[in-house]
Length: 452
Image 1 (cartoon, one colour):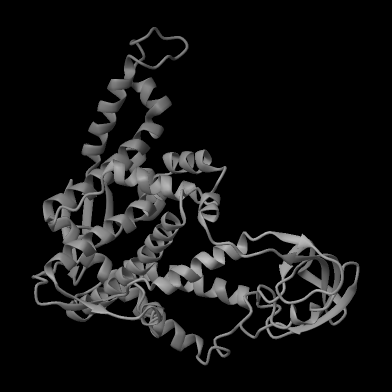
Image 2: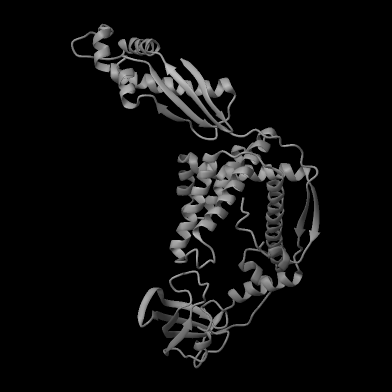
């Protein structure tokens, strides 16, 4: 096997490989010899098949395997001898194309091919102890805990059937059919649905027009869907609903006591408050972590600049662009609707792709140098947590991950990234900054473009 480097330009490499005919013939001979005692051919006793006949029957098939094995061996040799870390699988160009391959299979000529590959960049990580970050932290207000408990009590308060006109706070059981321009639309029909007047759970204006309705009454409710409505085909459109009230029920007394807590599986109201407080604090802590991580990634993005493998950037950009196009098809919006052009959008998303690849390579290098590992227990716990999101289908979800290593890799990746983030944060100078709940929950204006 002859290997010669023909290109070394940035992260791109090319190598010319020649597999001599004699070498291929020897490999073929070795493989056929190994088969001699195993194959069964009519007319010959086991182990007595002449080599010439064996070559005639199996030669082409075995030589095809020999060629594939030789090409794989050449790729491994190139990577190992040159100490390369590949960004992607090598691309193989056969000199002479199919004709050359056929000659090699027939052991009538050398096989020459070019291996084209792209390597990962080498860069110095340095230290992170000069990174200064602020971690926004918010404490749970007791008034918010009380409000949450009150909402829980409201959702579980009893309702009693009443006669006469409905009022705000009453629960209606309704059937409805929605129409646009006189024609029913998809998703606009409902039967025996409960609606608490004043809850704001339906389209703005819908509930107001049902105040005063009685059981058995039918009303036409006219509304306009919000411009930002999630179903794009309905956004901003006028609609009418034929609503029939099946029943009206008045709310019972709002009781907040130990019995309420027992309904949620806790022994006392104080225990319920503790549970609500803890849940809210975990949510705040999660938001705090997200903002700290965003600030860290922004800082790392500014600090590191190195050549990126074009293949990885193109893959990332392709995935992003496919998602953008899919979202546009679902929403019915164009780039013009968003105040931009396709060219400008592509440039923006390509920068996002470059950022993601750069940070991904940095995280991988930090994790490698820090010997970050994801244990089997951590991975299993993460998969179990995902399975719990599908009640009744837990076993099916678990089995899916057990049989799909690519899906498992998608679970492992964020776990690994979080551990690497912890490694960097542990070295950085992090200062807690008390903020209000509103400030903590406020989304960064440029969240989407900077997503890592």
